[in-house]
Image (cartoon, rainbow, N blue to C red; front, side, top):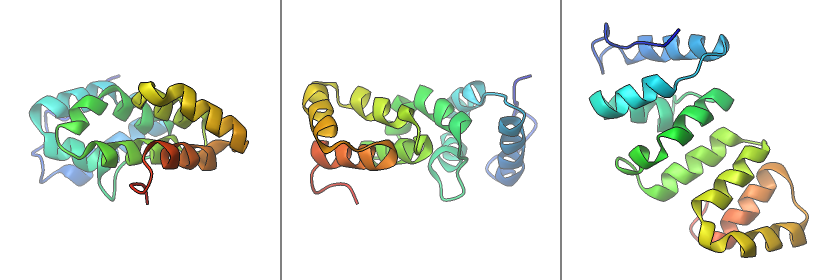
Length: 138
């Protein structure tokens, strides 16, 4: 079952949409179609769900945000999108893959440095970000 927002008056019904999306994630449904629809029809609602302070979280939210990352860049600074995606990926190995895919030109250098540091999980991602974007990551 695909989550549909067509019956909502966005952005006024954003809390309802957030509740529906949270319930869909809990049922194991994906948000890919919803995020793609919002990217076209209501980018403000998309940014709130994907990047906002009350944004969705967890592996399903990461997967949906990852598929539309280029669209997120149209509405937010790339570094902010990268930080949010890393935050969503959390301690999973997906976060390492994310960083290495986002900055492919530095892949071998970043991998070598991460291996040298022997870090894992979120600290490893932070180490990679520090290497790739020195002085820019809080």
